[in-house]
Amino acid sequence: MGRCNLCLQEKELKLSHIIPHFAVKWLKETSLTGYLRGLTSNKRHQETRREYLLCGDCEQLLGRDEREFCQQVFNPYHEAKQTSFAYDVWLKRFLIGVHWRVIVTANDSCPETVRAILDRTAETWRRFLLNESDDDGGAELHLFFADIIEGCTFVPPKKANWYLARGFDATPAFNKMEMCLSMRNSSR
Ligand SMILES: [Zn+2]
Image (cartoon, rainbow, N blue to C red):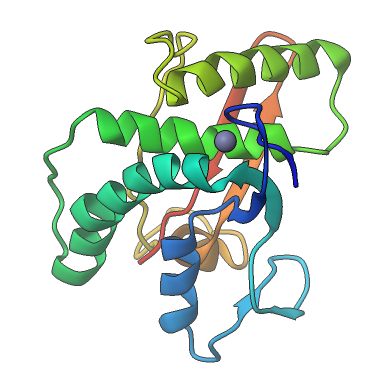
């Protein structure tokens, strides 16, 4: 039992993925070893990070957007090399949902001013995801499709192709002027 981070009600909490489960499953199924590996160490992992974050109802609410993204974009891209997609509000909800999970579970230390922006954004997105508000906080959401580098005018960093094709990375990044939240789970 605990307080659901989305609806804020005291309920039984589910162990939620931060990186969507379908993407983690795909990565394991298409890997040579069936395991996941970190960028900075060779340690094998069975799972990406999970936390007791949401109640069953809220997990289902966000799960609907994940399912749409998986069926309409992720699978057609990987299985049929489809490169154009019809989309609806579920795409925006999916992208905001993933970013919201990242910022509410981010425990990296960051300056207080940045933490305040993250907290404010998380609250705006929480209400958006619950369909209580249309306000997306003015967020710009971009979805890039990455692939491996076949030609380059300089020697790319070691593991660059691995990172582009099969890496999961969810890193809030910021500088003094701007803040941007970057979330990658591109894959090939
Ligand atoms: Zn809930």
